[in-house]
Amino acid sequence: MNDINQQLKDAQASAGALEQRLIELNKTIAELNNGQGELDKVFRDFAKNLNEGAGSLKKIEEALKKANLQFDRNAAVLNQSNGSLNQNKAVLNGLLEQYELLSREQGDHSKGLQALNVKIGQLSNTIEDQEQKLLKSREVFSAHKQSVEYLGSSMDTLKGKAGELGPGFATALEGAAGGFNAMKRDLIVYN
Image (cartoon, rainbow, N blue to C red; front, top):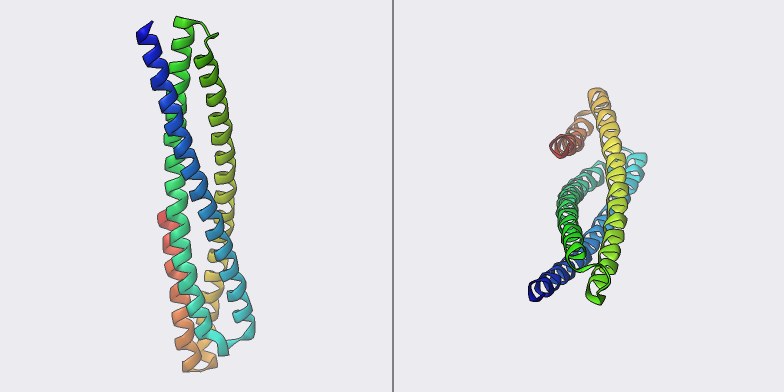
């Protein structure tokens, strides 16, 4: 009986540790959502600057640098979050196995085991919610990826015609197009 009580305490401690990891992952997901919002803002600013024409090519280059940094951050946070989510799922599966073993040995009427069952249900719901949030973030990231690819090909086309507009314009476009090519390389690495 003492061994079963210790197993129950261990399972409850694992559930508590998992709960803390889930709280940390929620913070990371919130950070990712903020980063996706920042990237949206960068793209809006970029579109505005692009509409203003060649006079704002320096602003476009600056926006591209900012977008590259944010894109890298978002990709890293998304990868980290996916890894954490997978680890949390594995811990939850271990808790479920412990619960099933304890309930077979002890019956599932002990208060400690019933409390563990409730905690496992809460943790399972939290993981499910996080999975949905990360799915949405991956979709937003994918939309950003498509925007980068589209804008990059537009910049390449514009760069090809820049010589007709003068050497200063062509040089500025080279820098902007280089920024898009860097983002496209990041996308290839992320995929």
